[in-house]
Amino acid sequence: MKKLVLTVIAALSTAAVFASGVENKTNMSTGYLRNPSRNTEAKRPEASYYNVAGTVFMEDGLYLEAGNQFVFKEYGNELQTGNAYASYGINDYYSNDETTVWVYPDADFVYKRGKFAVFGNFGVYAGGGSLSYSEGTSATTLLFASAALDYQTQATQAYTAAAAYTAAGDSTTAAAYTAAGDQASGAATALVGAATNHSLDVTSITYGGQLGVAYMFLDNLSFAAGLRYVHGTQSMEIQSAYFTSLGNGSDSISYEANGYTVSGVFGIHYRPIEEVDLAVQFQSKSSVKYEVTEVKGALASSFGIYDGKTFHTDLPAALNLGAGWQVIEPVYVSASFNYYFNKFANQDSILGETDYDDSWEVALGADWDICKWVSYSLGIQYGKQGTKDDSNSTFNPVLDSFCVGTGFEVYPVENLTVTASCLWAKYFDTDYYIEGNKTELSKSVTNLSLGVTYVFPNL
Image 1 (cartoon, rainbow, N blue to C red):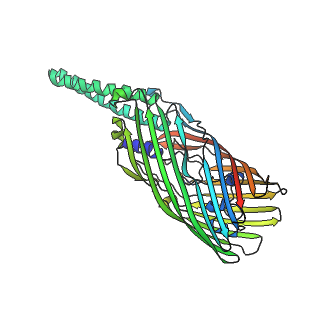
Image 2: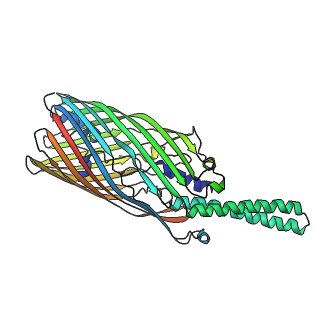
Image 3: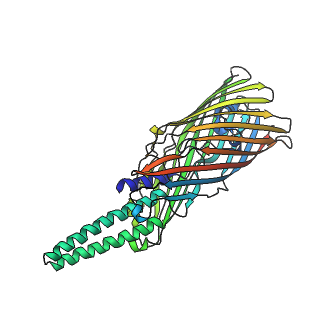
């Protein structure tokens, strides 16, 4: 029972919209959606996130960019037949979330002058959305069903003892055991009701920003360093009409948590010949310490949730590699590789620890200047997660994925760029076992985005 509780609560740490690492976000700009291969970016202000050392290769001027993504998603989890709680009617269970994210902002700036550049970025670095399961999830269903089974066992033992004392003529002790059995049986009934009739709402958003400088040591070599600040917020609420009869004091259990940290980012950009770009970037681990507040519901203490409790949900360190080639004047092709060091991060939650292996992604893409007013981009990406069949989340499934991104840049007037893009992600279903009970996890996400960039060339 305790292990199941830990499994359920551990999964509440994130409600990711799109991630290629378990926690780390990569969809940090409209440009990423049109072409996921961004690690050699050295023309647009989105380099302030994907290739910080590339900012000093941009033309002189002040670059400002802002955008918003619209995320259409469906997360699903299906509990397979044959589990231990079939007698409770919990033998073929499916729940899903279809909450649309309408506000997912990002902003970048770069000021380049001579051999120096100053860059900054703001966006959603982890989490990024809300999940709403009107029928709960297979994990929370199994949590309540497991508790019901424990209480039912206690009731059976109490009634057996009561019968033995009655036969021995000890009516007082028999009455006490009967009362205990009635209480345990009532709790079991209420928990079965909660298992089949509850809802879950989770929100997790980690806002981040970074600020740094880049310097060109040679005409073809630059180095950059910056500081990154992230602030994470989490909230969770489980509702059921049966909680009141369990002594909860209300029909919901909820909490909020906040955490923040500062970390570093470093990059090198090398241009061996005019047409070729090579880039290396390292994002150090962001160790986010959360503190729990606003705990409501007496049953929360049963899960070890209380005001003032702390835990770490880190953004693992990431290594970003990129290579790009200006094949001909209007066509630029690139490849990007990202590696996430999950094993060296504490991706924990209120009660539990996660156990993910490292994860990685690889992307290929091309940007084509069709004419002086329009350019077109297309890219693909494959992401391999470090999940195991006993380490995942029914709330926010962590799945391997294949993505296709495409979009247009339009230049209606001088120094102004308007971008529209779309990224479609194909996630591969996987099995996740909770206390031996098989759950099939699924996920689908489509991101649309609009962005605007303006350049002040004479500043």
